[in-house]
Amino acid sequence: MEAKALEGVKILDMTHVQSGPTCTQLLAWFGADVIKVERPGVGDATRGQLRDIPGEDSLYFTMLNSNKRSITLNPKNPQGAKIFTKLIEECDVMVENFAPGALDRMGFSWEKIQEINPKMIYASVKGFGPGAYEDCKVYENVAQCAGGSASTTGMLGEVPMVTGAQIGDSGTGLHLALGIVTALFQRTHSGKGQRVETAMQDSVLNLCRVKLRDQQRLNHGPLKEYSQHGEGIPFGEATPRAGNDSGGGQPGRILKCKGWETDPNAYTYFITQAAVWEKVCQVIGKPEWFEDERFKTPELRLPHLNEIFSTIESWTMTKTKFEVMDICNPLDIPVGPILSMKEIAEDESLRNTGTVVEVDHPGRGKYLTVGNPIKLSDSPADVKRSPLLGEHTDDILKEYCKISDDDIKSLRDSGAI
Image (cartoon, rainbow, N blue to C red; front, top):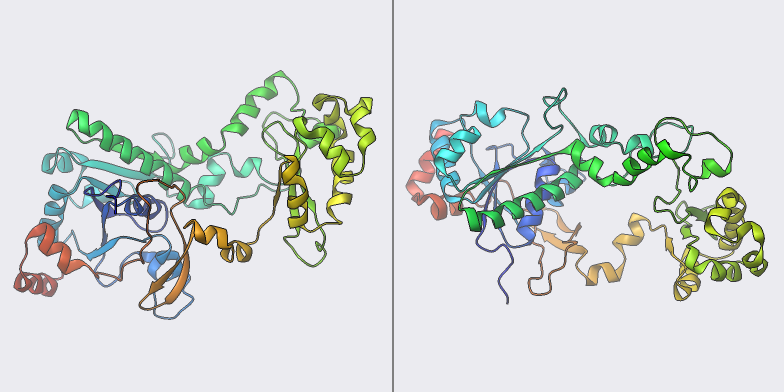
């Protein structure tokens, strides 16, 4: 088998909950040796959060910590601090998402880490970057709200909405992973480590860039592709909530399909792309629309989107969401079924590509988890179960710190591990 892309890279994983573990799990999937440092007897807080099986690690933990090794260690203990120092010496990357200043208070500031290992890449997740809010604690939904997502999500005139996608936590973890591999690559030329920081607010904003685009377009007139323009509703000073309107300039909406009365996910997303407008007219039984002067160009169609989509919906309501896909896809009409999590969990194609993976856990038994969404042709990622608390403590101490069995027992008795 080909070597993994990050094989040989050693990651000291000081992360917890979601944003940091997302980052380090991705690196582990690519073959890095990720050593997850956890508090003795306690571990990552998510091990016990939202438990569905009493006494076993939660799915919250298992789905964020695949392919890692777990060591229990107390860096505040004098002996534990010595082990932690040795791990810093041996590793290439340290990743943490503690509250600001937490590692400094343990005696391991960035300056101290550089002194111990000048090649160390020190990566951090923060809620906010430098500024008025840099010391504030941030969670997923706070990041969505501060990063521009919530204010632009939801229906016009209704309350802001957060999205089910974890763009604050997992999105930041993905950004941080890119920063880490970039710094690792630069180190091959410079020979030096560096700090890598990703703020959750910044990451959410990066994913909301089209809404920042629209904020600037407002200075030059109304956003004509938004439904409210066709309804004659004036725009305010900020990018508004646009419901399920497409954000790419090609009008699109979520429409009911056959069975919507009893199935909450019997819907499809339908885009009236300009290049296939004639085919859309034919499919929905309105061929005369292609010659209708009101609908001749995409811009002329914008004031009539309500009429257009209500007519399309009259057609989609006679078909299941999969029948809509089967009819429209060969015609290059962009549509997409609204898939429930149940349907995704049972999708064989996603299992075949390793996007959804079944893993066997010694306590939980079999469970589903996400696989690596990034596919490398010569370095396929295999997903292994998450570690039990402290499962690899002895192995890591022997391998990284050259500590004997007798000394390990003493360290355990002292509370260092």
